[in-house]
Amino acid sequence: LLDSQTAGSAVAFSTDHGVFLVARGEDAKSSPVRLEDRSGQAMAFSPDGRMLVCSVDELDVLIFDVKRRSKLDTLRVSGVPSGHKFSWTGELLGIPMVNNQAEIWNFPRRQRLATLKGHRDLVSGLAFGIEEGCVFTCSLDATVRRWDWRREKELQVLRGALMRFEDVCLSPDGLRLA
Image (cartoon, rainbow, N blue to C red; front, side):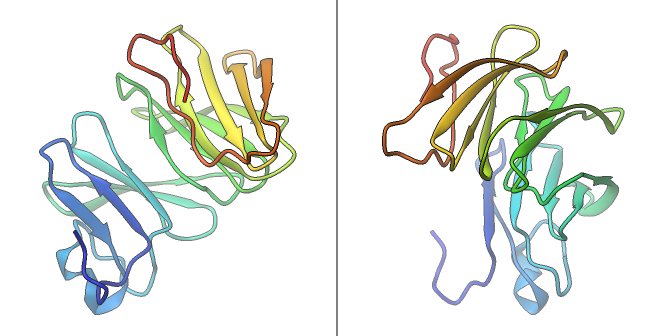
């Protein structure tokens, strides 16, 4: 997929099945955006593939127009992002963070809606449920938590015996969590 000479720390697939790499400096020529001396830590495409969100600095999430290869906006988050996940509709953006919490944003309005606090270690993954207001987070604290993000309320905690969770996803029918 990528050769060992390619620099960069984030990769994502676009909806047209193209691979995009966020790299630094001169290696950024194949990237959808040029980040100069900043290395991408995490990135995700919007469900329609038109926008790319990318974390490059400690508290900045950059938003790019993929077709125009231009920066549209910057979200200032309250912690260092460890990833990004869009809701099925693209209306919401979930940002798990290394400060043991996650944020939910209204993506079109660029407005923070909720901050989910309760994990005891880095929040490594996030998945939106099919029920309105439901989101799952996972953490290196060996828990997966189910939230009502609208009320910023933890609803359930699933504990792993010895396993630290790196990511969480929900089946399309909403019946299985992995």
